[in-house]
Image (cartoon, rainbow over all chains, first blue to last red):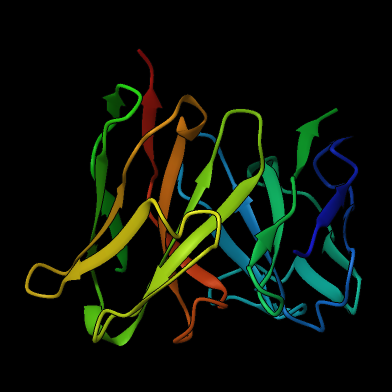
Length: 107
Length: 121
């Protein structure tokens, strides 16, 4: 199955900083990678689908890029509510798989 | 607004079965399928399977093929995940999530709040 490796596992940043999160696949995932935000006790939230498409209602500070085996989620300027866990998900190879997550924490 | 509301926490003994429900509101249940995903303590997310909104055909991760059954009740807009022969390593938070396109290989655009299933003797 497709293994998604996210890095870093944890990143310490301040509000206003740029966050760059990486998701690397061990085989091509085309452009079929999604990104989700997950806060404790809440339902995960879809941010980006198919590499670069923002889900409805997602602020423009969230952007996604990449294809093949390397994908990036960028948060251009961290808002206080953006400190959370982020995970990637590939859907094109069977079975669908998820990355281990990157935690964005306050510095 | 679209909501997926899951049933409450469960504690089960090894060998028992559990059924988790996921009640949908805010859209036509039969138009979209539901995927089930779990997260064990300290582990990443694991996709378990998908069931279509109509006519309720399911696709399973090979790991869960023999122990999990996904069903739906369109009359109540509810999806169910049943797992049998529970083991301690099935202890996890189980999520239902709406598939944005009609396949198990889909982005998941709305999620339930999760159901903690604890398997312990």
